[in-house]
Length: 253
Image 1 (tube, one colour):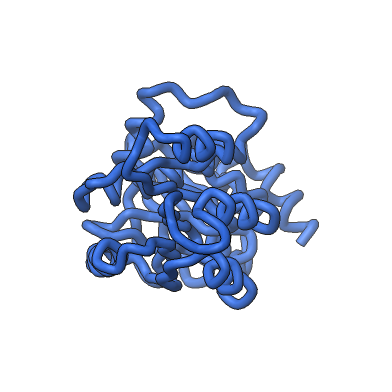
Image 2 (tube, rainbow, N blue to C red):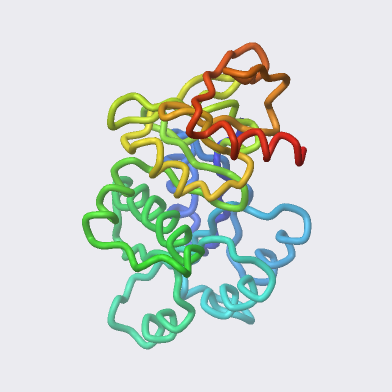
């Protein structure tokens, strides 16, 4: 289980260090702090972050916007633009890159964390092209829960930080009224969404319902009987309604 990695491109040293400290306290990992676009792009060859914070008005051969454009040529990582001038020419150029969120200076730590949650939500929404655009209520709900799927990971909020969990490491899901429990080897997470919504948001073909109240990760199924499947040491019930689809998937495996 890993926390999300964040890359910071910011040429104001004090601002960059403060962001790194606060993000570290919140449970994020810092993959790098850079003050120019060239070094930022070179870092992608060895370590791809989960989120990139980019000051659009930086010094050097290429500015933050040009850096973001080059990143987008090779990666779909969520981008957050930082700007001190929301009405500037830079800002008009920045909009064409379609970042996942903006952060306007001066900002506080709450603004920083909210922008990251918004970026993750917008990233997920952009990947669901066949679904309608989220309403403002859906956006608010996502921002509150902080649960997002990115490149095979789901970001799960636990107390005041995020855990980056591989979908393949999930054992099973269990409905708990209007909530859903995600069970991994390392522990349990509670999401303020129902089981079906969580499955829809994950979009994983390997996680399938076995029962009205359960969904199992097929990669983790170790054995099964007529009325249950075993996910490692956990016995999960299989109901008649879901049995046929589940068994067909297991035979494929």
